[in-house]
Image 1 (cartoon, rainbow, N blue to C red):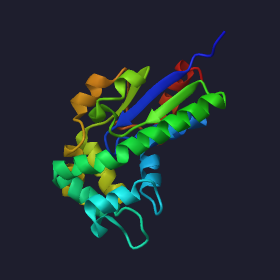
Image 2: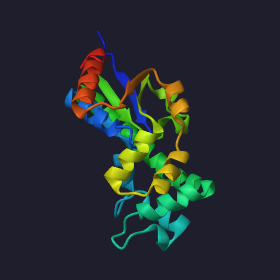
Image 3: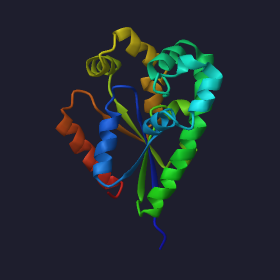
Length: 203
Protein backbone atom coordinates (compact mmCIF):
# COMPACT_ATOMS: atom_id res chain seq x y z
CA UNK A 1 0.00 0.00 0.00
CA UNK A 2 1.55 3.38 -1.01
CA UNK A 3 2.49 5.83 1.72
CA UNK A 4 0.20 8.82 2.18
CA UNK A 5 2.24 12.01 2.14
CA UNK A 6 0.71 14.96 3.98
CA UNK A 7 1.74 18.43 2.79
CA UNK A 8 0.99 20.92 5.55
CA UNK A 9 1.28 24.67 5.05
CA UNK A 10 2.23 26.65 8.16
CA UNK A 11 1.89 30.42 8.31
CA UNK A 12 1.24 33.34 10.63
CA UNK A 13 2.00 37.02 10.87
CA UNK A 14 5.29 38.34 12.20
CA UNK A 15 5.49 37.71 15.95
CA UNK A 16 2.72 35.09 15.93
CA UNK A 17 4.91 32.23 17.15
CA UNK A 18 4.97 30.37 13.84
CA UNK A 19 8.67 29.48 14.09
CA UNK A 20 8.12 27.95 17.53
CA UNK A 21 5.29 25.81 16.12
CA UNK A 22 7.55 24.67 13.26
CA UNK A 23 10.28 23.65 15.71
CA UNK A 24 7.86 21.59 17.80
CA UNK A 25 6.46 19.84 14.71
CA UNK A 26 10.02 19.05 13.61
CA UNK A 27 10.72 17.65 17.08
CA UNK A 28 7.66 15.42 16.64
CA UNK A 29 9.10 14.00 13.42
CA UNK A 30 7.82 16.26 10.64
CA UNK A 31 10.16 17.39 7.89
CA UNK A 32 10.10 21.19 7.78
CA UNK A 33 10.78 23.13 4.60
CA UNK A 34 11.56 26.63 5.87
CA UNK A 35 10.98 29.24 3.15
CA UNK A 36 12.63 32.01 5.20
CA UNK A 37 15.75 29.91 5.78
CA UNK A 38 15.93 29.16 2.05
CA UNK A 39 15.53 32.87 1.25
CA UNK A 40 18.45 33.63 3.59
CA UNK A 41 20.48 30.88 1.91
CA UNK A 42 19.98 32.20 -1.63
CA UNK A 43 20.76 35.78 -0.52
CA UNK A 44 23.90 34.86 1.48
CA UNK A 45 27.35 35.57 0.00
CA UNK A 46 27.64 33.52 -3.19
CA UNK A 47 23.93 32.62 -3.06
CA UNK A 48 21.91 32.00 -6.21
CA UNK A 49 20.06 35.34 -5.94
CA UNK A 50 23.08 37.60 -5.54
CA UNK A 51 23.80 38.17 -9.24
CA UNK A 52 20.21 39.11 -10.00
CA UNK A 53 20.02 41.42 -6.98
CA UNK A 54 23.16 43.33 -8.01
CA UNK A 55 21.91 43.68 -11.58
CA UNK A 56 18.52 44.93 -10.43
CA UNK A 57 19.41 47.10 -7.43
CA UNK A 58 23.14 47.77 -7.58
CA UNK A 59 25.63 47.91 -4.72
CA UNK A 60 23.07 49.35 -2.29
CA UNK A 61 21.48 45.89 -2.12
CA UNK A 62 24.67 44.31 -0.73
CA UNK A 63 26.56 44.23 2.54
CA UNK A 64 30.35 44.49 2.62
CA UNK A 65 30.45 40.68 2.98
CA UNK A 66 28.53 40.17 -0.29
CA UNK A 67 25.16 39.16 1.17
CA UNK A 68 21.88 40.92 0.50
CA UNK A 69 21.48 43.87 2.85
CA UNK A 70 18.28 42.62 4.44
CA UNK A 71 17.52 45.74 6.48
CA UNK A 72 18.06 48.05 3.51
CA UNK A 73 16.01 45.93 1.11
CA UNK A 74 13.26 45.41 3.69
CA UNK A 75 12.86 49.18 4.05
CA UNK A 76 12.85 49.69 0.28
CA UNK A 77 10.45 46.82 -0.41
CA UNK A 78 7.90 47.75 2.23
CA UNK A 79 8.03 51.38 1.15
CA UNK A 80 7.54 50.73 -2.57
CA UNK A 81 5.33 47.92 -3.98
CA UNK A 82 7.19 48.01 -7.32
CA UNK A 83 10.52 47.33 -5.62
CA UNK A 84 8.91 44.60 -3.57
CA UNK A 85 7.64 42.89 -6.76
CA UNK A 86 11.10 43.15 -8.35
CA UNK A 87 12.70 41.63 -5.26
CA UNK A 88 10.18 38.80 -5.10
CA UNK A 89 10.63 38.07 -8.82
CA UNK A 90 14.30 37.33 -8.14
CA UNK A 91 14.02 35.44 -4.86
CA UNK A 92 10.70 33.55 -4.96
CA UNK A 93 11.46 31.26 -7.96
CA UNK A 94 14.71 30.21 -6.29
CA UNK A 95 12.91 29.53 -3.00
CA UNK A 96 10.28 27.47 -4.84
CA UNK A 97 12.95 25.44 -6.63
CA UNK A 98 14.79 24.64 -3.40
CA UNK A 99 11.49 23.90 -1.60
CA UNK A 100 10.67 21.24 -4.19
CA UNK A 101 14.15 19.75 -3.85
CA UNK A 102 13.82 19.57 -0.04
CA UNK A 103 10.31 18.07 -0.30
CA UNK A 104 11.53 15.32 -2.62
CA UNK A 105 14.50 14.63 -0.33
CA UNK A 106 12.18 14.38 2.70
CA UNK A 107 9.87 11.93 0.91
CA UNK A 108 12.88 9.86 -0.19
CA UNK A 109 14.06 9.79 3.44
CA UNK A 110 10.73 8.28 4.50
CA UNK A 111 8.89 11.29 5.94
CA UNK A 112 5.12 11.19 5.57
CA UNK A 113 4.42 14.68 6.95
CA UNK A 114 6.16 17.62 5.30
CA UNK A 115 5.51 21.08 6.76
CA UNK A 116 6.05 24.07 4.50
CA UNK A 117 6.83 27.00 6.82
CA UNK A 118 5.93 29.99 4.62
CA UNK A 119 5.49 33.48 6.13
CA UNK A 120 3.77 34.83 2.99
CA UNK A 121 1.75 31.70 2.21
CA UNK A 122 -1.60 33.50 2.03
CA UNK A 123 -0.18 36.49 0.15
CA UNK A 124 1.46 34.40 -2.58
CA UNK A 125 -1.80 32.87 -3.78
CA UNK A 126 0.02 29.91 -5.35
CA UNK A 127 0.43 27.63 -2.36
CA UNK A 128 -3.16 26.57 -1.71
CA UNK A 129 -3.33 24.01 -4.55
CA UNK A 130 0.01 22.49 -3.49
CA UNK A 131 -1.04 21.75 0.09
CA UNK A 132 -3.40 19.37 1.85
CA UNK A 133 -4.02 21.61 4.88
CA UNK A 134 -3.09 25.09 6.03
CA UNK A 135 -2.27 25.75 9.69
CA UNK A 136 -2.41 29.38 10.80
CA UNK A 137 -0.80 30.56 14.04
CA UNK A 138 -2.91 33.44 15.27
CA UNK A 139 -2.73 36.21 17.85
CA UNK A 140 -3.90 39.82 18.10
CA UNK A 141 -2.05 42.55 16.23
CA UNK A 142 -1.24 44.22 19.54
CA UNK A 143 0.50 41.05 20.70
CA UNK A 144 2.39 40.77 17.40
CA UNK A 145 3.73 44.30 17.76
CA UNK A 146 4.79 43.91 21.39
CA UNK A 147 6.53 40.58 20.72
CA UNK A 148 8.51 41.85 17.74
CA UNK A 149 9.50 45.08 19.51
CA UNK A 150 10.76 43.04 22.48
CA UNK A 151 12.45 40.38 20.34
CA UNK A 152 14.07 42.52 17.63
CA UNK A 153 14.36 45.88 19.32
CA UNK A 154 12.48 47.53 16.45
CA UNK A 155 10.39 50.67 16.74
CA UNK A 156 6.61 50.27 16.63
CA UNK A 157 6.47 52.07 13.27
CA UNK A 158 8.83 49.56 11.66
CA UNK A 159 6.80 46.59 12.89
CA UNK A 160 3.54 48.17 11.72
CA UNK A 161 5.03 48.79 8.27
CA UNK A 162 5.94 45.12 7.90
CA UNK A 163 2.51 44.04 9.11
CA UNK A 164 0.87 46.38 6.58
CA UNK A 165 2.69 44.51 3.82
CA UNK A 166 1.43 41.12 5.03
CA UNK A 167 -2.02 39.58 4.77
CA UNK A 168 -4.44 40.81 7.41
CA UNK A 169 -5.35 38.66 10.37
CA UNK A 170 -8.81 38.12 8.85
CA UNK A 171 -7.32 37.01 5.50
CA UNK A 172 -5.07 34.46 7.20
CA UNK A 173 -7.92 33.09 9.31
CA UNK A 174 -10.11 32.79 6.20
CA UNK A 175 -7.41 30.63 4.58
CA UNK A 176 -6.93 28.38 7.64
CA UNK A 177 -7.97 24.75 7.81
CA UNK A 178 -6.57 24.63 11.35
CA UNK A 179 -5.95 27.60 13.65
CA UNK A 180 -3.58 27.63 16.62
CA UNK A 181 -4.47 30.50 18.95
CA UNK A 182 -1.23 31.73 20.49
CA UNK A 183 -2.68 34.52 22.61
CA UNK A 184 -1.75 34.63 26.29
CA UNK A 185 -0.25 31.12 26.19
CA UNK A 186 2.95 30.23 28.03
CA UNK A 187 5.52 28.46 25.86
CA UNK A 188 4.73 25.10 27.45
CA UNK A 189 1.04 25.57 26.69
CA UNK A 190 1.79 26.28 23.03
CA UNK A 191 4.03 23.22 22.82
CA UNK A 192 1.28 21.06 24.32
CA UNK A 193 -1.23 22.31 21.71
CA UNK A 194 1.19 21.62 18.85
CA UNK A 195 2.02 18.12 20.09
CA UNK A 196 -1.69 17.32 20.18
CA UNK A 197 -1.96 18.57 16.61
CA UNK A 198 1.03 16.46 15.59
CA UNK A 199 -0.88 13.32 16.59
CA UNK A 200 -3.58 14.29 14.06
CA UNK A 201 -0.82 14.42 11.42
CA UNK A 202 0.28 10.90 12.28
CA UNK A 203 3.46 12.01 14.06
